[in-house]
Length: 145
Image 1 (cartoon, helix red, strand yellow):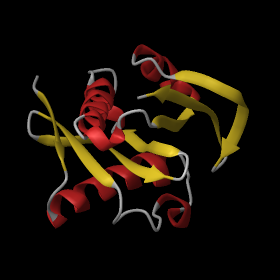
Image 2: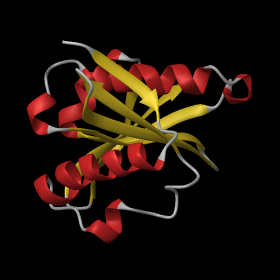
Image 3: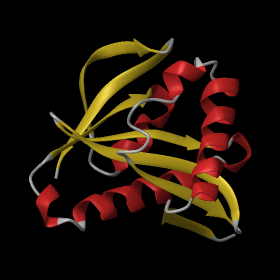
């Protein structure tokens, strides 16, 4: 099994990541479509993960006033437990760290409970109290870059 992660550069790849997010967030987790797709789609750096050439997962990152936010991590149900999420986190962190202007910035995310063990492996730490976002329990997690 081969897992690849690449930065999204084409409209076709963007269409693939929106399909993944629709399946995972909108259909599986019942997130309202207007909550899922936002004004940051064009200003974010998107990634697509593939398993044996087939779309399997996605993530994005963007600059905010608080630092760099990692978000929209989604792996198709049938592809979970195969290392796709780990490959996505690794690729996103490498991309952020490849730009010297990002050095020293706070990296943060709103992590669903099921994903916290994955982010802990990369050094992210939970902050504050549990909160609800789109009716799903999350913790804020952060890492100093």
